[in-house]
Image (cartoon, rainbow, N blue to C red):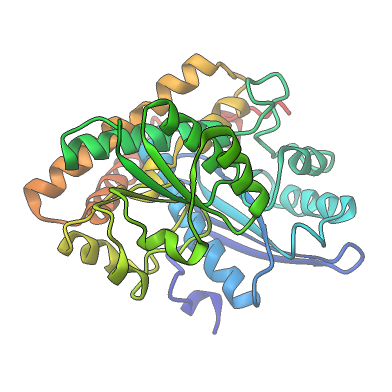
Amino acid sequence: MTVFHHPDFDHHETVAFHANEQSGLKAIIAVHNTTLGPSMGGCRMFPYVDEEQALTDVLRLSKGMTYKSALGNIPVGGGKSVIIGDPYTQKTPELLLAMGDFIESQNGCYIGAEDSGTSVADLSMMSKRTKHISGIFSDGEHGGDPSPSTAYGVYKGIEVAVEHQLGSDLKGVRVAIQGVGNVGYHLVRHLSEAGAVVLAADINQANLDRVVQEFGVQEVPLDQILSAEAEVLSPCAMGGAINSKTIKNIKAVIIAGGANNQLDTEEMGQALAGLGILYAPDYVINAGGIIDCYYQTVAEENSNRIREHVDIIADNLKTIFQRSKTTGHATSDVADEMALAVLEAAATDNSIDTSLDNISQTS
């Protein structure tokens, strides 16, 4: 199968493959759309089964970043990169430097940031070879780590979803979280402070032990978290959690989490609506991280200003939920329509500066 005939290829502007024999790097960069500006998105490292799985992931993720930035009201396009490999056993300084070279070869049309399997330290290593890196602003509140902003946005989204669906606040509401790594950990903190009852599962026992000890979270077996007895299901791990098999057993009436590509297929959005489950579209609710990275990139790292901008997530979700209720369309379809409207408007507005100089790199 060629890239152009791949089912997830959606008029992507660039799909670049790179291998470096000396370091062992095998990676893909996908730039979906630069209508709003140069593309920005995380660099993910994951032990994909094969190149086909990696290509599917980077194509879907980069498209999601386009829509995420559009509704997040930031002037950047959608891009993503993936490194094929185990981040726990195959990550080396040489590999990260080679990834920096690969990003630099794209001449600024892609700006990398932290994602699953990479850290602020990893991005800092890449920045030795490229200036097109975000999320390493050492003077920031969290040392450049955007995951707290992602978690805050997800928390505000859950708050709005619960109010819309249940007509209540979060006190006593049961939230089942799949994955309590960087984003999930901070989400647990926000929810616990709001009085929610948190259930959690994670493939990494150390992550789970941390939230159990610090916040009194109820531990749930990994294979039972998606069907847990809870009002809210919050996927915060890898994508595809909501699929034709798992959807049958979901007991939650709200799905709102930090993971990307939570729906295995686009049809899952309508399927959830048919079951009366309120879905907070993933690229809307988890936009806090890319908003944070944008502010770091333009050297305006200000925690109060970032938080105020991230609050746009709650407003977007209120609009999406109401339009979905009025039109009968799935929330995922409504979100897509809103994002496309932003892109179409920008494409016809010659006053928008989408040049690389519009974003000044300061790392």
